Image 1 (spheres, chains in turn blue, brown):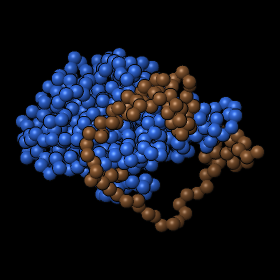
Image 2 (tube, chains in turn blue, brown):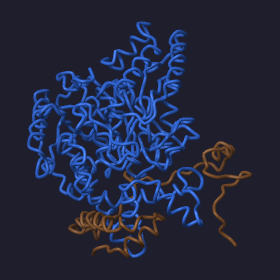
Image 3 (cartoon, one colour):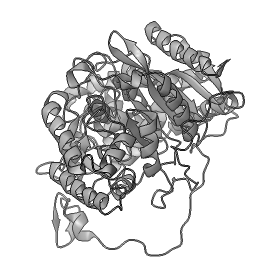
Image 4 (cartoon, chains in turn cyan, green):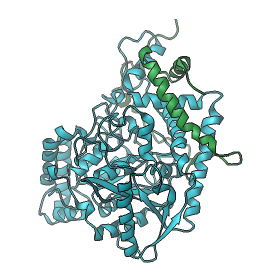
Length: 484
Length: 95
């Protein structure tokens, strides 16, 4: 039952072959069996899930169901869920029960889907290995000695072990695509503004974007149809028609021009990863696509630029966690300053504190021009590289991450080494364009992702390009042996 | 430039973060490593480049000045660390 695509599950539910309660119970049983090993979920919402499943079964019986009604899903614990703990994997929000739903949670509920629980992540989405979570690291189902990637590591591990048929994630610098790459998933970071950020706990507001983490491009398209769209409650949401993402999945790739940035295949890339990615690209050539070498000359600027922009925005966003209105408060504060500083000192983990301090420094008097303003200028250069490239090519392809999954502790002592995990993903966030990672092969049993980057609002094209590849390959259908 | 112990203490104060005395040296080391990374931005001349604040160069959207939210004080204060009679409590600020 856990090997079925969303369309297959939908058919089974609508035909009465299975009920939503049965399907939900099947996944809850799997979570119960495997989550102890993987630590993929922070909160499992069993009772609520079964209630939602019952309601879905009623809709199905009454012929009032939509395509996704009754299908279970896991939410990254960054999305506010009314009445359910929303921790962002931080001690700061360990007891935070959200008083409202995020817009995407509302939309997914309204579609009749069933929420299985809230998945583990790097604290406040800051990390690339899921090792910064207050609730402990998540294990990669492909090798439990390895990280699942981050920050959406819990959603990635849950999906890889088939503890949910689909999951939500967020991507600020690669947090959907890098774990998708490390766990053999199809993950899409849409264009900035495509999906509402309302109720998604903010890390870096000009970069954050939610998206689906799925077993195939087709499944991702199904969830994109629900998640996307304008929301007046998010001031950066874009008011633009949402296409039916499933409608163009089978469009021909004849005449497609794929750009291959030389900066993506140089120093820093594992040669075995390069070989896997190049094989996938050759496959596209055999499917009718044309290849063209391009240059994104400011690629090396992306990580430095990001580590000003993202910390600056996080230092501002996380200032609301002050121990007064919600979140962790220290015992016996001696005065207001003590309440603020110790509540925050105790509530935040090390990586979060590092980034708040970098951001505070970059925004402090006398340093603004040298850091924040300079970073915004570099950001434009990075964005303009993409705009120029898209004059000649339809999409850009390359690796999603420089290496397959690495071992726990391998990069925790050196924040800068960890930051390099995102060298191929971060510039996409800075530009605000969509990118996805799809399974492209394995190295010694560990998955490798191919990244596909598109121009603004080209999500449908990306999903189409990914889907056509998945019609000819079965990398995306591979499952880790221990969780079959 | 390189941050020293005093700089780290000052930044932590500005950020309203208490950090342990023993942890200051490793914060200083990590922050300096990150700033060295960030320093690579200075390799490019950006003197004529307009800063980019928003990926879509969008401007702030306005909405009609109408009441859209209802009072949810009880729901919001139910998750507060300390409240009394509808207000949030903090240590005494004014003597």
